[in-house]
Length: 292
Image (tube, rainbow, N blue to C red; front, side, top):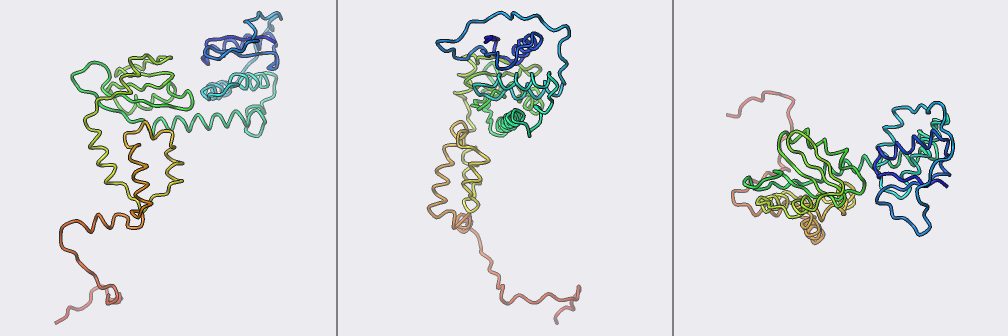
C-alpha cells in the first residue's frame, strides 16, 4: 500500500494523482492523506513509488478535471479516494465512471449536487453586517458555517454584485476578503477575521428584525417547506433566526387561523362593507343607459 501525502488542496491532490497514474498505481494500492486528515496509529509514512513511470502520461478530459475539482469540495473521509478511482478508470479508457448511472459516477454526481446546493445556501443565507465608516478594514462582514468547502469557489458571486464595497466572509475553517479589486483567501481563517465576523457592530439590526416580524404572514406558514428551503442549521447565524421559532409558535397558537386580518382590523379608519348578495348581474351592454 502506497501512502500518498499532499497539502490537502485539489491542486496538491492533482499533482500527486498524476504521479501515481504515470507509475501505474491502481486505486486499491493508494492510501490518501491530506493535511488536516487525522492519522491512525498504524498509518504508513509517505512511501516512495518504486515502479517506472509510463513513457507518455495519460490524457484526461478537461471536463473530468472540472468535475473532480467541484466534487473535491464535498467533505467526506474518502473524498480523495473516490476522485482517484474515477480518474484511474477514465485514464484506462472507462469513461462510464463519469456518468450518473455508474456506481462511482453516481457517488460523484451526488457530491456535485450537494456542493452546488451548498453554494446556493451561501448565496442565499449569508447576512452581511455593515461596520462603522470610521473603522478600518472591510465595510461588510458575515459569518457562515457551510457543510462543504465551497467558500473559495462560490464567493465570486458577491464580488460581482457588491461592486467596490469591501467585505469579509469568515467560517470555522477558512475566510475570504474582497478589498474592492481582489479576493484574498485564507485557510485556516485568521482569528481576527473570525472575531470581526462573529461580533458585528450593526446598528440597523433592530430595524431589520422589526421589518421581518411585521411582514411574516402566519396564515401562509408551511413548516416543512420553510425548513426545506431554509435549513434549521442556518438559523443561529441569521439575524432573524431567533425570531423564527417564536413566530412559528404564535402561528400554531391561533395566529395562523387569523392570518393578518387581526392586524388589519386593528388599524384606525373607516370600514366599507359590500353587500355581495345584492350585487347586480353583469350586463352584456358595455355602456348601460344612465338612471333618471
